[in-house]
Amino acid sequence: MNIESIVPAPAHAGSVVRPYVLSHGTLECYDIEKSRRFYEEFLGLECVHHASRGLSIRCGLKFHIVCLEVGERLKPVSVFNHWGLDVATPAQVDAAWEAARALQEKYEIRQVLSVKSQHGVYSFYLEDLDHNWWEIQHYDGFQHDDVFAAGDRHSMADRPSQRRLRQGIDATRTD
Image (cartoon, rainbow, N blue to C red; front, side, top):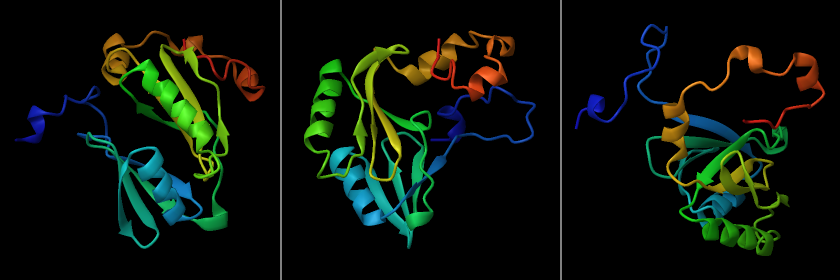
């Protein structure tokens, strides 16, 4: 199979960088062994320990997260910097929420937020032992395709002012 048969053409053919895939992202952890246990046993992700302080995490498709053990140098992130995991049904969201609450101590989950219907999905967020945020969501369809198929819905002029963003106003608006 050649790469052109499975990869869509880049949206900006005139760009400086001509990528064919968004391949990976990076997050930090305190202790790679504890984090791996959470990723595999709770989130159901596939992990490989590819470097002395590095772990690669994936769930299908052609994208992975590199988890780097940095110990106390870890910089916590906010819920706005989260990773999304899709499940097949709303009932699976509810079951994952119940499990997160029941297993919070075992996996050192810091926070489990309420289940809500928002920005077109039924979901909840949790903060893991390393201050990384995860959204467990159900979307009726494949959100990735639908978001890009819809195209731009706003112009850059629609964004809140920098002053309002600094105050945290409109920070959660996604409509």
